[in-house]
Length: 144
Image (cartoon, rainbow, N blue to C red; front, side, top):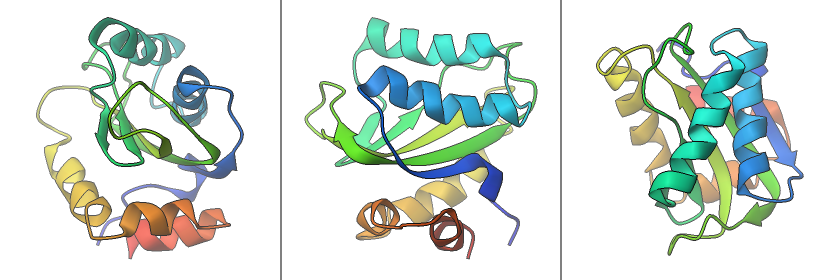
């Protein structure tokens, strides 16, 4: 199977003060790997401010994203785990795992998202990812 998330786009046990900083950190991995421009991170934060915590899809898990835009240079995924979970204002708070997704259009990412969703929605997977102490541990859970 093709690599879903590169180890360069995974960070574990990140310390953040709030959900905005969590999105900032997860987005910065995509910025660093030249998948997005800076404005896409701002768009993700604005999406939560405008539409509420809809990104928190399951207990402890958020899918940070914004709509496709010219600020997405290439489809990409990053994942961070948090040292201390943060609240988004959702019934599924607190969030401890954030998957950040950037898409160039509305369709090309669907197969990748499906594969990631199948992995993440496996019973207990969010907790297993959150408890990983290393990037390699998360990488193995996601990509194997």
